[in-house]
Amino acid sequence: MTALGFLYPGHSAEDDYPRMEQMLGSDVRLQVVHTDIGEDAHRVDALLEMGSAARLAAGVEELRLTGAEAVVWACTSGSFVFGWDGAHDQVRDLAVAAGLPASSTSFAFAHAVRELGAARVAVAATYPEDVAAHFSAFLKSAGTEVVSVRGSGVVTAAEVGTWGRDEVIALARAGDHPDAGAVLLPDTALHTAAHVRDLESALGKPVLTANQVTVWEALRLAERRVNAPELGTLFTKEPPVQV
Image (cartoon, rainbow, N blue to C red):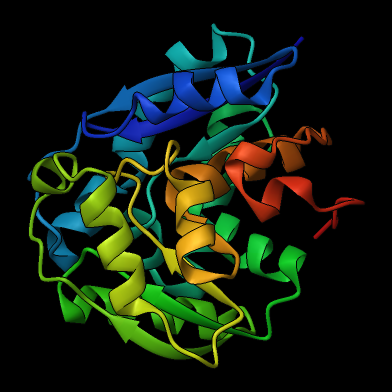
């Protein structure tokens, strides 16, 4: 059995993880430990505090007791707001604290885009425009061309967590661009695990969502490959790209 650990801020769409565990249909276990979200706000200062080393370290011991082989900070905005170098520092500190290979959802997106071979991407974000711009800058630092960025102005993860299938598909369609080889939905508070195939069918191209790429990244760290078409094109690519 492969046990994978996730530090997830607060409570919004964490039920995506047991759903994805079932979709993987193998001996993979997804262990979620919740961290203190602090102020629930898609605002840069609040996000920097949410992703602070102290808040992440507080969940590490519980996660280690699960027997996890790798850990991913399951938060996009709470990692990319630190910038390319700061996000590396965040993951490095997490790896040291956990004694495990570590990553974050922001790096998961960067690696997944490379896995798909998508030269250009579009971003369809729930965040306000200024926060979405930080994600675009992070992707550009990773060598990805971002052809369009759409922010939705949603301030809290709690609100995002109430969105259903129709809202998610509408978000993806609104953020799509004809020149994009893939569309990225970068919020782990957004329920997407049940909708990836519908999203790709609606857009006619690969779609990467935050919780989906977070699980894929943990599998990559553990050097596991699981074919799970229900989770989209990303989970049907072979062989794995080691970044």
